[in-house]
Image 1 (cartoon, rainbow, N blue to C red):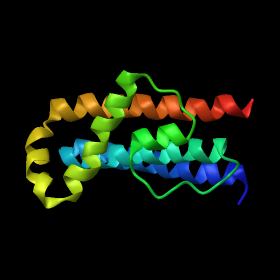
Image 2: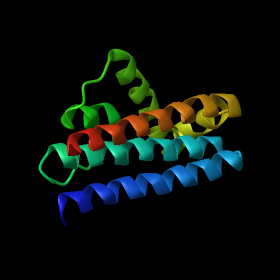
Image 3: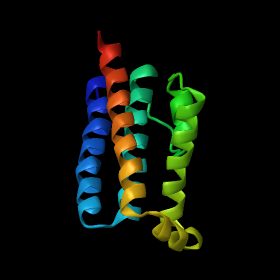
Image 4: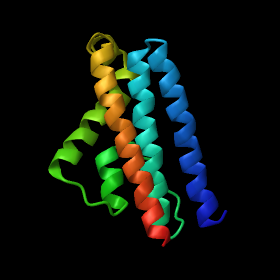
Amino acid sequence: MTIGEHISYWIKSAEHDIETAESLFMSEKFDWCLFIGHLILEKSLKAIYVKNNDNRIPPKIHNLVRLAEISGLQLTQKNKIFLDEVNDFNMEVRYPDYKHSCYELCTEEYTKKYFSKIKEFYQWFVSRIELKKS
């Protein structure tokens, strides 16, 4: 697989997940919308990793802050805090101990705020790949 194909694999998958998350939001499945939001950022970071690491396969980790670091992104402390908060959506929906509290936390307003920011980060991550092409 070429580096372009490899990057495209991750980005197309993330784009599919954006559509899925939008559907979940419209269906008022707010906890799952944010769970998929985590996947959107994870996959876009893995595309950056591929771009910046000579087409190497990204590690099988889910921590967004760590993925950003090993991908060579320079993050502000505020951005690191946001990505760490999004990490929680991966855990809270997946594990029963956290699931109920996450369900109660994920109101429409809360989800809208985070999902909007997730989409902004996705666009920023994709722009980092495009800038590197030139």
